[in-house]
Amino acid sequence: MTGDFLHLQGDEVLLAIRVQPRSSRNELAGAIGPELKVRIAAPPVDDAANEEVLRFLARTLGCPRNQLRLAHGRASRHKRVGIRGFSVDQVRQKLGAVG
Image 1 (tube, rainbow, N blue to C red):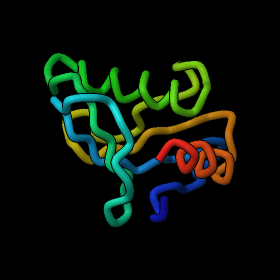
Image 2: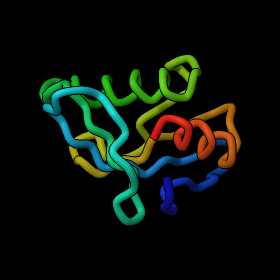
Image 3: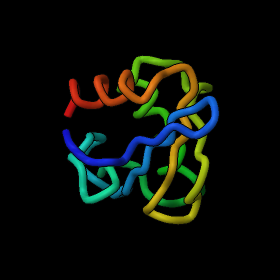
Image 4: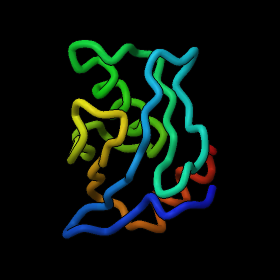
């Protein structure tokens, strides 16, 4: 997986994603420019897709959900997720192993 969707900001890694809600399943769909495309089965209603994105990424990274936060883009398909407890290289490796 290539792309410049990971950045270090303070004590967390910021992951730039583009969310496609109402997909048939949750999956990483590769890099699209400066973002990682994430397909999510949940609809974008009542914050369901945002919560599912964070749960899916926590499972993918093998970390507790509380290490992730939605840093930007609550009402947008373009989001930034803050990830604590990992280096940029560790996140890149875990995402690359899945994608």
